[in-house]
Length: 352
Image 1 (cartoon, rainbow, N blue to C red):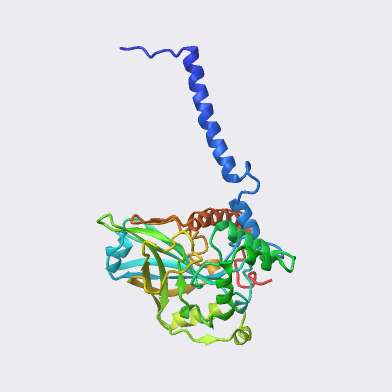
Image 2 (cartoon, helix red, strand yellow):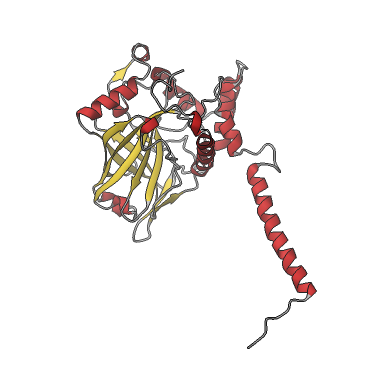
């Protein structure tokens, strides 16, 4: 039998150097990711820190979209999406869905009438063991074009300088479109009347290998009824949760999922720019919400609606936001998981 070769001192030294290089490289990459080599670089820690409210951080809660309520139901695919993507979720059939209606605020006790951005987190599971997670909001476009600009917007909005937002807006002219929407778009009194938009671009790959860059939206079956903000302010601070709970108790509520396909000239890396209305759209199925549960006891409590959790047949595009959101969501999740003992477990505990 052949005897194992003995390594020479030079060979041993060479291998040790190689190991040191690999470990050193990994450490350097980690340090770069953490921002240690570039203090001005945007990191998940910095972004999460920018969400801090002026008062104490509500421990155990998400760092943004902190106020929410869970739901369960099904996604009923009609089969039309299979033309665009090989993901099983688009094959005709019904798939378990769970999610969370929420408000774009770090304050879990914010009155509903004070928060302009409403959102939905959604997870759809398929028999092949894959999941599709997505987080959508009601604006038709994002306030800014890059994660760095979003960080600067958060810092400016929290600044004590009365001119901070004016200075920010001058540096980021794309913000004016969102500002106009926030001031003029009608409010509604119900999550069930809200359209929710992915805003970020993703790549769908069909079984044939053909790729399409897409965005998607959930269109409500309920007819939106405009309500003035002053009238909403007269309602209970939690009117959105109360409304959706009552509606679903009476009957399931529905949204149609519509996928919009980009033309080659459309901006795919900038969610602050909407695509033209005449772009091709495909109705791929219906989200049916069947049950509402309070978040403190609900199935969405510990779900991280990471937009990069995607089934085969869907992947991220050149849009930088999904990966940035993923890293921030993970940081937020880790923080609230470590603070779990502080999370209110009863309705009484939930209020200050």
